[in-house]
Length: 299
Image (cartoon, rainbow, N blue to C red; front, side, top):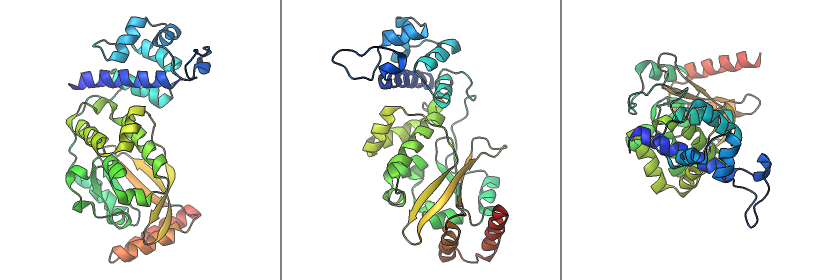
């Protein structure tokens, strides 16, 4: 299946999933005898959106048609899509989406990105490519998680590790919520790239390897990234309350940096320093930099 056909298929599957998840009373529709309260007919969606039934049916079937932006806007309103979900279907149809990019190099991040990660010192950080392959990381992240260089390149992917690595599940007390959230973020970002070989291979492998992934993928959830607090349960130093942030270098816009900083109102700064001291030699300069940052944030 070529990339355009895969995007049409994904658009149709997403619209169908959202239609079936709608609660009829949200649209002012009466219940259907013998049916649950959720789920709306195609005819009802087409009427409420001002779109012909045939045209909407073709959209859900992934037919080779080109919906206008106005049609997609109307469907987004009827289906009660969030801003992120609305942007997602627009990108699948070729509107307000980034220009197609070459297949990403998942094996290595640009040298300046690696140097930036190392300069972050005591803050665990790593970089991902558009298919969520982990392309670079710093020593603090190795201390927090594990040495990624020992993981096969094919498995060195954030989504793959979340759903298949027992160490990640053990470190994440709220794994069910976190895994669903990451899957929804991946789908929102990967929509226009689902036809690329790396994304297609990743989804196929995860469908075969993880029952939780299969269930989440079929649900078609979409979510945008937001900085948030994360609780990681480390087997040596215990609970670490960290904030997760994401940045994109302006000269490498397809690289994403994920950075963990300790929550200063908890004992995470001290626990993190102890963890790094046990794993990284000659940490005096890193400790000094981290302490100066902590002092500035507390002022």
